[in-house]
Length: 138
Image 1 (cartoon, rainbow, N blue to C red):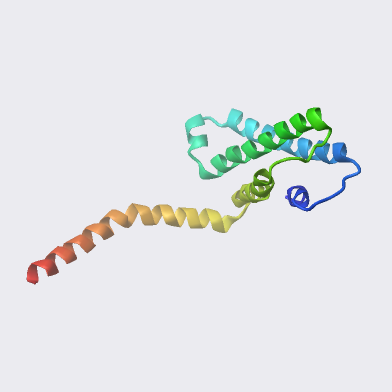
Image 2 (image 1 turned 90 degrees about the vertical axis):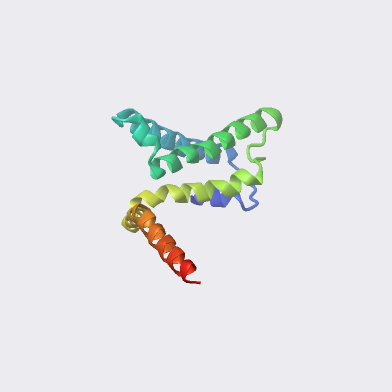
């Protein structure tokens, strides 16, 4: 996250290749992590229906776009960091979303929302019954 935030500030990098290499290594590590989790998951459909796993897969998209754009810019003008600001703004947020799986309170909150959604039809039926009852009294 710190590397992505550091990109948003104008810098005069003396070693753009070194910074790009560190970012590329981090991106490759994230890709390998997700690929190994997909490969080791017994049910691929359950893997993609988990919100945490979807966040991890979506977080690879801006990283891939940034890598492709950096390589394309390097070939054209020997500048690595002419990447659109949208990608630079999205990367820190998406990488922080990857950390959600580490917090127990987020898992507890998602379980609570699932339980509330299961009881919602009963509550809606009760509210509709009360509304119809009092509408009939008018």
